[in-house]
Length: 385
Ligand SMILES: [Zn+2]
Image (tube, rainbow, N blue to C red; front, side):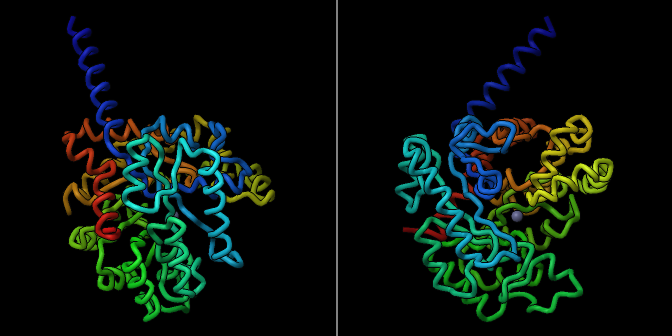
C-alpha cells in the first residue's frame, strides 16, 4: 500500500512537471544545428535521430518554443560574413518549406503570433564579431535577417575585442578589451536591438562591454566558474555584474563546462580510441562531430564519464543565490557539443530539466522565468518596438 501511494505520488509529480513544462514558453539561446546540418549534409526538417541532437519535429516534442540558432564559423575561415549569410540561407530554406512549423520572427508581434500558432520562433545569434569583417553596417543587414544577439568574440578575437582564449594566450598580440571601434559596435547593437552576448569573451572585454552597453546583456551559453573553473565560465564578480545590468546567464549543457572532472576522464577515453579518432578527423569533419561518433560507438564507456543533471543544477542554484531567479535561463549548446549530462541527451530531454527544477523546490512562477520569461524580458528591453 505504502509502495502504491508512493508510485501514485510519483506519477502525479511527473504529470505536474509535464504540464508546467509544456505550458511555459521555452527559449533556448544557443543551438548549433545549422552548422551541424551543413557539415553533415542533412536538413533540419528530416528525422535526424541518431545524427543530431535536434531536428524540427523533436524541438516541438521537447517543448522548445523559441530557438536562437547559432551562426558560427571559426576564425580561420575566409569571408566569414558570406559564411554567416550562407548559414542563415540554410535555415531560411527550412522555414520556407515548413511555414506551418517554424517562423523566422523579426518583430514582437511576429513572435507572439508564432507562439500562439504553436510554431517554433526562430532567430539567429551570430557567434563571433569577426563575421562583420570590421564593417559596422553589416550589423544592420544581420538585424534585418533576424539576428537578435551577437557574441562579441568566439574563441578567436576580431580586431576590436579579445576572447577568453586570447587573453590567456602569451602569443596573442591584439588589443585587450574593446577598442574604440568595439565600443561603437556595441552602441550600434544597442540601437538596432541586437543583444550583446558576453559568452566566450575575455574578462577585459567583459568589463568593457558591461560599462559600454546601455541595454541588458546575455551570456548565451556559459556557466559558473566557482562551480567549474574553466575560462569559458563566469566568475562570481562577473555574474553579479550581469545581475546588476539586468541581464540573463543561460546555462550551457557541455559536460566540460558543467563538471571540472570531466575533461580528464574524457581525454583518457579519447586516448584509448586515438587511432579511430584520428582516422575520422582525417576525413575533415569537425572535432565535436568526430567525438560524438566515438561516444555513440562506445556508449557505456563514454556515458560513465558524463556528469549528472544535479551537477548542472548546482550552477543554476549558485547563480540564483548570487543574483536571483530573474537572471538565469537555458543555452544548451546542443549540436555544438559532444557530451552533456546523462539525462540531457537531445532536445527531447528538456522536460527533465523542468523536473530537476521542481525537485529543487522552484515554484511554477520561477520555472516559467528560467525556461523563457527572463530572456523575453531582456529581449523586450533591447527591442521595445
Ligand atoms: Zn560557443
